[in-house]
Image 1 (cartoon, rainbow, N blue to C red):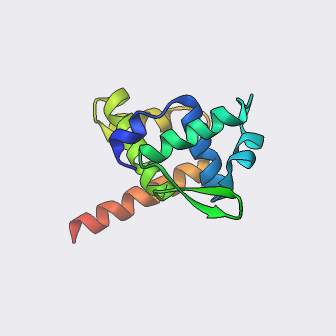
Image 2: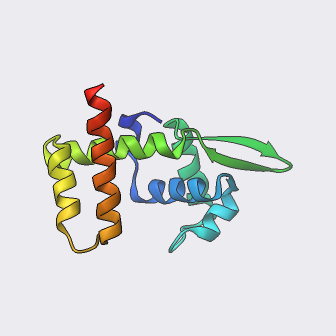
Length: 128
């Protein structure tokens, strides 16, 4: 899945991708079972067809059913989504995005300490 295909995903398509990342592989019926306010079975099949056309998923025959899986590793999709978020909402500034994340009350001291160590480690690696 390229970044441009990720950007074109509808809410329902993202739900399907979330399910496939969580389950690793699933049939249309199983995907429908796991969707909130699930649409009809035929609507799920249509979503799967569109996602396959976009290059987001692949399928393989398993008996009489198709089993679907994400075509791109979750980490690659996550990186693409994060880059898009930083460009869209923070003008491309990683610093602004991180500042927003750490300014809230939802990070524990332990999480802040781990982030500090990551930043220190990155600084050290850049000096080499």
